[in-house]
Structures are given as structure tokens and as C-alpha cells.
Length: 103
Image (cartoon, rainbow, N blue to C red; front, side, top):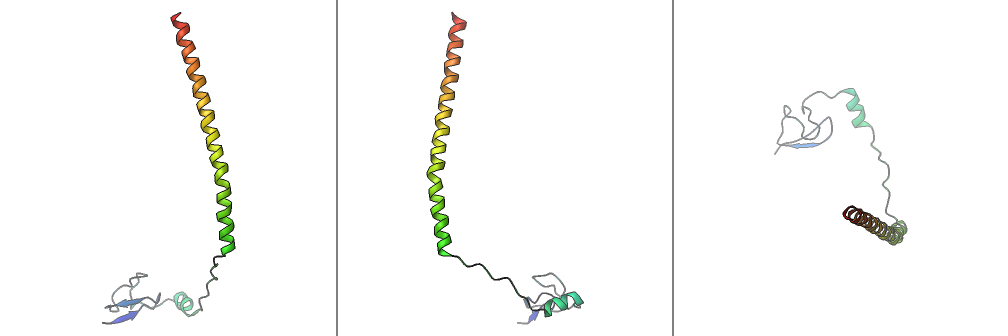
């Protein structure tokens, strides 16, 4: 099993020849490497440190979301009550209009 490392991106390609394309970057494995790619591959790759999960921050976020839930539920209940009142007023107006036209 022949394994060729891609000179362009560094990916390992199994059962490949120099005329095959790289599975990761799609370039021909035997193609000459451009100077920009060569400089990029030789440069040390430094990545930004990953942010670690802070348990206190997680607790604050969950506490905050639990505090806002009751307020949103109360707001939703208020909206339903207002909608019920509006529908009742519309029903009364329609009833009065129907009775007025019959009379």
C-alpha cells in the first residue's frame, strides 16, 4: 500500500501515484509546488488558543435563561388574554349588527 503525502496541502493519500489528484485539495500529486504554497507549508502554523468553558459562566447563562422564562410566559399569557377580549368585543359587535338588521 503506497502512501504519498501531498506536497501542496500535506494530506496523506493511500494507493496513489504522482498522476493522481489529492483527496483533500484536488491538485495533482506530482505537480510542482508554487513558491507561495512552499512558503506557506514551511511557515510555522500557529492557531489562536481555543476558549475553554468556564463553569461559572455556564451557570450564569442558565440562571439568566431560567429567570427570563417566567417573564416571557407571563407576557404570553397577557397576549392571549388581550386576544380573547378583542375577539369577544368583535363577537358582540357582530351580534348587535345582526340583531339591528333583523329588527
